[in-house]
Image 1: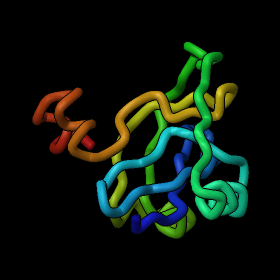
Image 2 (image 1 turned 120 degrees about the vertical axis):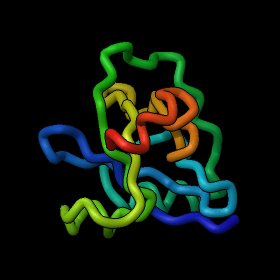
Image 3 (image 1 turned 90 degrees about the vertical axis):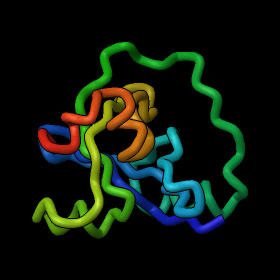
Length: 112
């Protein structure tokens, strides 16, 4: 699997990190405090992290499949809207651009 560290950015510009599966073109749901923690989880074979305490107070985020794009702050590059829970450290919304479009309708492409 081709995977790399991506990021979710909250409205206050804080970030959490995730693993983005480049072969399937989807973000994996677990979130991590650092890029290293995300990479360590991937290097360990991505052991199951089944959340039973998913916080319902999730927030709007922007997902950057490549964490370096989030650091640029330019808005260029691949990114899409989703939702995430800081408390549960879990991506709760769309895991890819296409999933976002399917969930929000075709107008999401023009609005984002």
